[in-house]
Image (cartoon, rainbow, N blue to C red; front, side, top):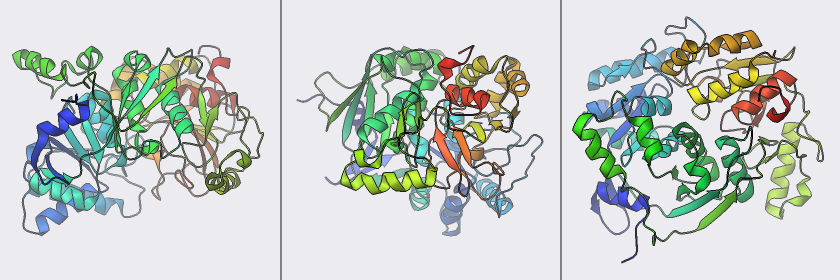
Amino acid sequence: MTGRTIVDKIWDEHVVADDGEQSLLYLDRIAIHERSGGRMLQGVLDAGRDVARPDLVLAVFDHIIDTFPGRGDLTLFPGGSEFIGVFRDYAARAGIEVIEITDERQGIAHVVAAEQGYALPGTTLVCGDSHTCTLGGLGVLAWGIGITQGEHALATQALRLPRPTVARARLEGTLGPAVTAKDMILALIGGYGAAGGRNAAVEFTGSAIEQLDAEARMTLCNLAVEFGAWTGIVAPDQVTFDYLRGRPMAPSGAVWQTAVEHWSGLRSDPDAEFAFEIELAVDALEPQVTWGTSPEHVIAVSGSVPDPSVFDEAGRASAQKALDYAGLKPGTPIAGVPIDAAFIGSCTNSRLSDLRIAAQLLRGHQVSAGVQAICVPGSTPVKRAAEAEGLHEVFLAAGFEWRESGCSLCFYNGGDSFGTATRVISSTNRNFENRQGPGVRTHLASPLTVAASAIAGVVADPRDIDGS
């Protein structure tokens, strides 16, 4: 008998029924937020149905709330107050506890789920957000769903879907100075394309993965969807267990040990077969920066903007369109491109480890004149922990705005904006046209590269900044 992958093992443990084409899969966890969660709940309750397991639903405010200090219930999002009100009202009617805006647990769903121990290895978890795959970094089978699927999930605690193909991405080697998990996944997307994941569940393996901490693994899995994957996952190991131990919703006592024993078996068998395999050697990897309007439009910070002629016929027109939007010419060194703003935040790179490395580089430096720099922690616990370490003082002294937690300017929602800024370097996950505002040109990078660029006033190599 052929061995099984980690995805197959988790899937098989959750199958309620299977007709040979699709499985009815039991869901251990459902996360919802105020932008789409209210509509999901409204669809269920107004149809006369109940939420099957209110106790298994994580409900948070993250997408459209303000991140300005003293925000309360304020939102700049057009119609945002109605979204907030509907979400709060229907959650109460369904018997779901909502982590309120002022709650000390508040934050981005994918950050909260991890730090509260709500997302555990081997569980199935869905959320109305495409970057739910973030939690695969903890060995969770997690994926994003739409509103209709959300209604089904809430009403039945299950979803019907085809078994995914499973692929393996081997990342081998040791990262050099100022090179992070964000650079690894951007390089992978750049090398294999934004469709390289082929809608598969991609397991990330290799010596480079083993060396990453749990938060870095979540960053890696966060961009699996930008790789065209259905989800991403890393097999749980001692790094995972150490991260989860003592979390509020994690098992404890004798149950903890039983859980760890089970989690330890959640790894692909040596003879497991994969639909396809890809590789990336990271020893010589440099910090990465995007130049266009897709995460696959990425180069090393020492590189130059490519000429569209180097792409195949299908990609040539897309590359030219991206260059036109980005306002860049082929052959332009990416380092040295002037920026108007720098943003550190989002479910990709807003955890405590991200803020620590950025603060380490910022210490003793000033944001360049004319650059708007913003830091938005991924959750209130992250914010409080950073403040306990004095990291906020480093950000503020350098010239960054220090905000409350939330999704913020990961995407433009008609509310908060960068003002007159038109070129932004950002630790987020998408650089699509208008993603961060009408006409805004976004360069994706790691928090270190964002911090270095904020100091320099241009896209900059963090290895060239004292303190990196």
